[in-house]
Length: 65
Image (cartoon, rainbow, N blue to C red; front, side):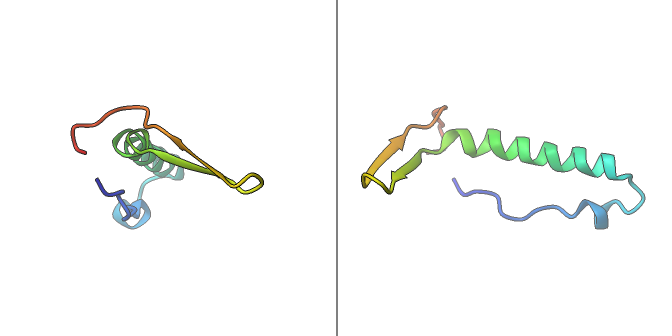
């Protein structure tokens, strides 16, 4: 499951659209990315003071793994 890298340029795609609509489109893209990727990935937290590594499990299990 790879993280989506390419961001859509809504200014070029829809030149006559207002800034508020562009902002809403970008927020909805980020929300979709969060639901499709971010909650399904484990996190690694490294404490530099003590040198410990803590793995935080994913919040949702996925059939795609």
